[in-house]
Length: 199
Image 1 (cartoon, one colour):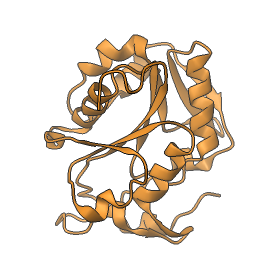
Image 2: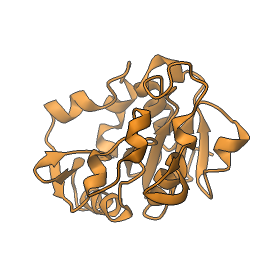
Image 3: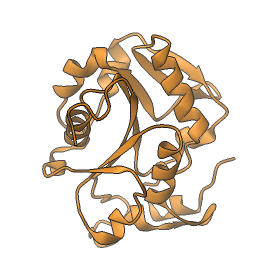
Image 4: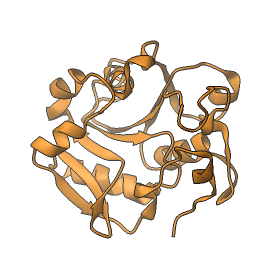
């Protein structure tokens, strides 16, 4: 589905191909399919996908094509990342290659289900207004997701390992977008994290 599908658009990329070993070292229990007490009736993945898709055309990068995972995606595009074990950067590159014709991307994480759609829309707006990199800030601290304009596509496609685009944020100019969204700091890494909720 790559090519001209996303031309002229800011696209949401949801990275959801990790194994979640901190959540369940055996790998048997998917954190993405856990129900959220703070969002009754929604799993971690469904909530993250819903918020992203409410703001932007969205494609989700995943490792597995399991029916129970695909059922969480709604109308979002799905991208299979065969080399996800190489690290987060592999998932990111896979998604960028799929949506390489976009004007920019808001890169979100599948285990961050509480990020508000308004935050995602604000990052996209910053990109449309000329920001090359846009990050959300809540109570003075940066969080996720992060927006990139297509100016940085060549750099992003060279990323390797498990650090994602963190190095670019440390070495390049960044536009900080102040938001009232505690969800930019809340991720699901352990079983106890399931019980957390936005303030």
